[in-house]
Length: 113
Length: 112
Image (cartoon, rainbow over all chains, first blue to last red; front, top):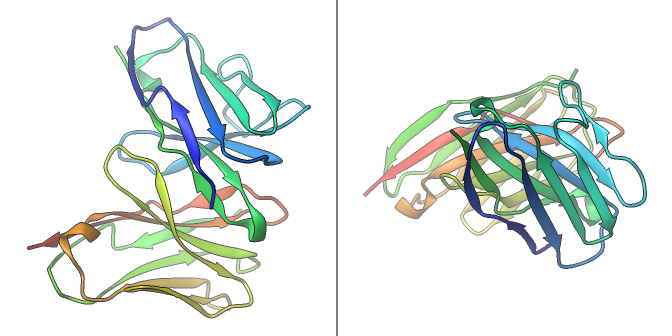
């Protein structure tokens, strides 16, 4: 398995501000993923983050709104920029280990007022 | 485009019952299928991973089956307990990639 931590665990933010979410893994991984889970919904992939290259964003998500950093093989950040109430969600990072099993962090619960 | 569906959306049963959660997917060319558990407001816990070459996997009171040809998987929970109350999600990777497509989940409540 993988031990994944996220900071912060939750936050309440004002409209128009930005929040950076950190994801730390206990071992080196090639790919890290960022997902969003809106209230009452399932998970939707935001982007895939590879170390040393630009993140790959899914349809409907753009770098200006969700910039991602991947400075090394154990760490990544996701920033939610210029937030609005519609950004209120749980944001989760995940990693893919051997045999393609994915493991998820505990999530960051974001509320935008 | 791969789509994943879970039925039922919610299920409430008394403690001790055996139950089955269903997951279906539209594209049968999958590498594997993964079942997760999510407690309210929390992250996902991986329960079982079934490779495409396998028909079932077991972990404790949980048993997951996979029928690729019919595009279906089931999660069987034996002797349910109140601590099993959570949302159960199934997910499959998009062909050729490692990113997952999730079902909407089944919200399970086990009543003492």
